[in-house]
Image 1 (cartoon, rainbow, N blue to C red):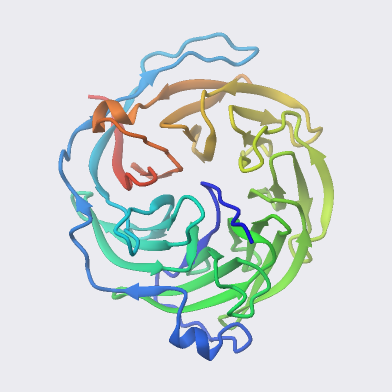
Image 2 (image 1 turned 180 degrees about the vertical axis):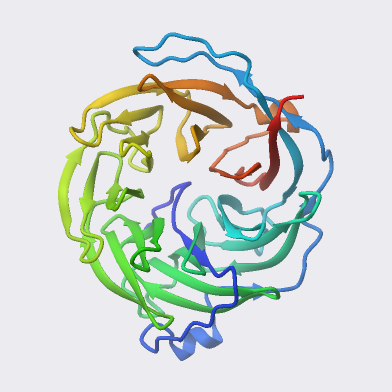
Length: 403
């Protein structure tokens, strides 16, 4: 069996407040109690927190808009990133750094990071950290997974969920490597892991709906869209629909969508029934790529291995596209700004007169030295910007007006 690996895969959901999960006997075996997938360490670690060069500036370089109908240049981008420190990555049992893939807010200035091993080897991990009053990162808890990659982290419903690519799934009598893990967290760290097996390889995305208290998981290669429901704290897989190599999930209003590199579809949020399959106006040339987000106006931003693509939801027509010069791993929309993890840079864009306008980009190597900065995810919350850079670790910034 070969392992299907990507840079942006799998998801996790953690509790921000104390949450007591009732264990489902069908999901948790006695073997898993004594031989857990996650090896949790709630000792406070300080040796992986790097605070050298705090206060340095990561500048933005102004970019020209390349939209098909807009040929205007922006004024100097009015913001800058102030470096607050970073979390160096978890290391595997051979002392090699894991790759930081995904980062998300857990609430109250807490954050979670998911890690995996690039290549055929399985080894993953999870970090929970908070920002101090000075915005420096402080590690709270960690977990390693010697037989699994953990590729994405998500929160919702006062829980943390993990998307897991599990090597020894057959020994645990799971159907496939794709597994969703749930972990409680309180002020002392991570507790009470639970696991829900899915179909397919690698959980590639997770999304949670507070309206119906359901978690949605995308899994790739012989997988599809899974709906996980909760009843008095107990989680169960309630619905599933096959869909080849799903890459991303997004809500557009109350409508649920999921996509791969070639197509997207609307799904019934309760039954997971596929309702309206559409081919992307501009497809990806790489099956592993397919970042997706929905805008407030209902339209889609789709990222493939070279371009950011703006698509009309109503008639599935191409509105605009811009070449960013690198694979697009994540797209985040905060207020009127679009933050894109593209290659080794953060690209900032906006929509102007219905078209994509590129505003600015960063260059990590200019500030932090040489080497390969693979930016897997950019997470913006308030004035804080968290960036996962593979084996370089997770960088923490404050976004402020340029002085």
